[in-house]
Image (cartoon, rainbow, N blue to C red; front, side, top):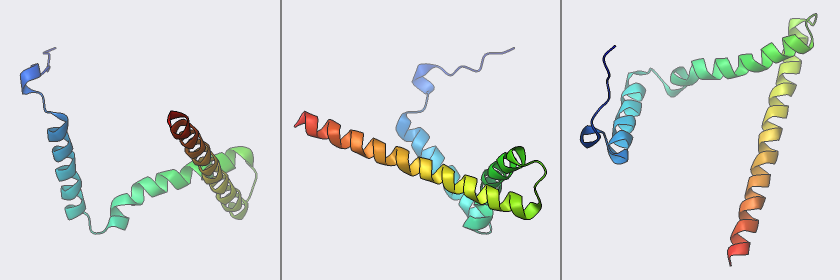
Length: 100
């Protein structure tokens, strides 16, 4: 197998990688019919995670019950993110005040 290593002098700088990524993002947005269409697969995948969890917790539940449980699992997920965010802000505040 041939090595595809790029010599150090030919590697992109972080700024060049950033510009390439920005261009790719703009090209993707330009070809998508809408922002909603562009993110639909990711949103569907994220939602299906909670439906899978609901089915594991309640294998004999009806579709309505699965939907209800999935909504609660999603709410619990975002509540946990909110708690972690508050803890991170608190830790940053303590760190900043300790440096003063």
